[in-house]
Image (cartoon, rainbow, N blue to C red; front, side, top):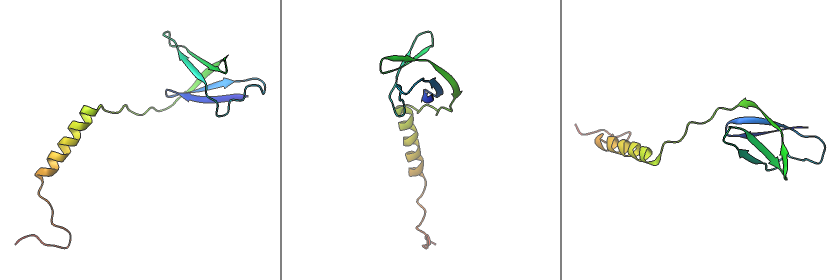
Length: 93
């Protein structure tokens, strides 16, 4: 039986044999090593896995200081603009 899971933008395939390893909805433990290898274990068993697809990763969020500065700039810019009259009403003149 072939099972799949995703981790850090990569899809992995785990081939299991027999009914003793039911993995649907199961939690696995991932161990990342300094040499770049990955070890997957489930219920004290080490499982062989193969990466087969890279998934698109979302861009990292900006830090809070950058977001705060952008929000303050938008607020300052909107404070400088004159308010438009409500629809259906005319301005002075």
